[in-house]
Image (cartoon, rainbow, N blue to C red; front, top):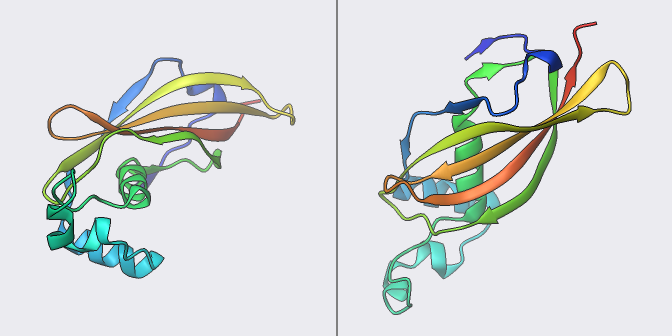
Length: 147
C-alpha cells in the first residue's frame, strides 16, 4: 500500500483496474459472523444447508462486499474521499473455496457542489473463479481538482 495523488482530471472514463484474487475460507465466515452477529444458518450450519436448494453454506453478502472492496485498496489517494456505495446487488452466491477478484471501471465523472472538487464513480464488479459476476456496486468519490 502506498500514497499516490490522483486528481479529478487524472480519472478517465473507461479506465479499468483488476485486482489479485482471494480465496474465501471457513475462517472468513466465522470471523465475519463474529464481527456482525449474523450467525444465520445459511452461513454457519453446513448440515442444514445440505437440506436447502443451494446445498452448501453461502457467504455473507456484507463479507463479500468488504473483501471485494478491500482487494481494491492497494493505493491511498489523499486527493479523494469516499462518499459511499450505490446500487449494490448480490448477483450470485459465494461459497467456501471460491476465489474472487475485483474489477473497477471509471464509469462517470461530474461536477460537485464545491467548485474545487469533482465527482467520480467507480463501477465495481466482484468476480469468481468461473468468471461470473457475484456482486456489483458503484463507489462514489469526491475528488480534488488540480487548480
